[in-house]
Length: 338
Image (cartoon, rainbow, N blue to C red; front, side, top):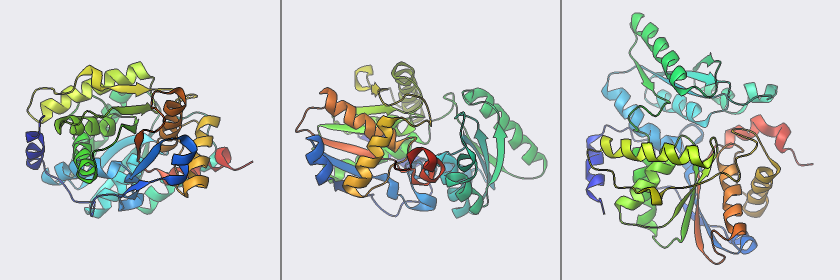
């Protein structure tokens, strides 16, 4: 157990965007349908600017930005990134400007994808959009964002860059170390936990928090951007960098990291029949919405894990809903019934 890690978190500047713990709810109809006791952690209800898991991460990034005297935050994401929309909301709450660098990660998308959903909401939040032509070049995207920040400094602004690449301090993961503690204060009786795994901050932070509390429940990360091997390596590096950030030895073992890519195809931000089925099951069965990029893929992964037997029938399972509902409007042509 590494319980002192939670004391170390107090040393990091933090904005308070969440008003309290997000709900933990039982899903009775999907439980009966899937043959497990299914629960959902409602991190779609983190509140600020459309909610989602990124609000927990941004508490620490915006805390660092305010501590540095910033008046502008800069961040990179896909065109329909929930993260950049949430960052624009967090910046607005803190009285800062936001510059959102959008990457062309998802090929072949139509007009709705380029202008509705998260793009539309970010404009309402007063964000400035700039574009980066690559989609799989984290170092290049970070370099371009730092160049833009340098130009802002020449204009007398005080920018703060929220980085994309792995070679940076994983401040965002701290928010999910705390989320793990929040869940365990409500109940510690889950047989399995399933969570989306993209940048790795949510998955890595939550897993690290559980293990710091001495909780050995398997945490299954559902890959939304990379295959399972690449995501495993990313989680390993994040866990090492998180330990370094907190000034302690790494406490996660490789055996703790579970990544699954059965719901990933045809790729990041692209919708399969499997993901459409998962989104419709949740909507028709429980009246809850999932997005096609993160939460929909993750719930498709839940179904796969149960149907394959990796999660046994009768298990008590927690599905972490990371939000992203605004992106549904950008995918209406893909998801329209019939």
